[in-house]
Image (tube, rainbow, N blue to C red):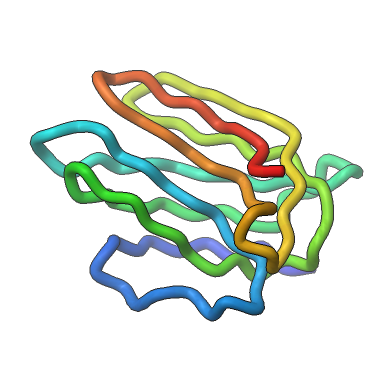
Length: 111
């Protein structure tokens, strides 16, 4: 599967409700924050790699070009990295969530 590498910002449109997705929550009050995200499958193959620029105090979702399944989601901001095994599905309750604020970052399974 080819790796999709892209850079987007939160001005991009909403995701389709029937596609696997990734959620973001930026708790910072000021400044834009760049988040590098890598998603790998069970064989440690990168299936998605992107850089997202988040505006302050935003909760946002983006569609992912992956099949429903369990993946390792790794997110990095300013040298801080977090990772977790996450089930990603088209169901809004089953997606990886990346939260950031005050220079900290976390990745959690939405299931």
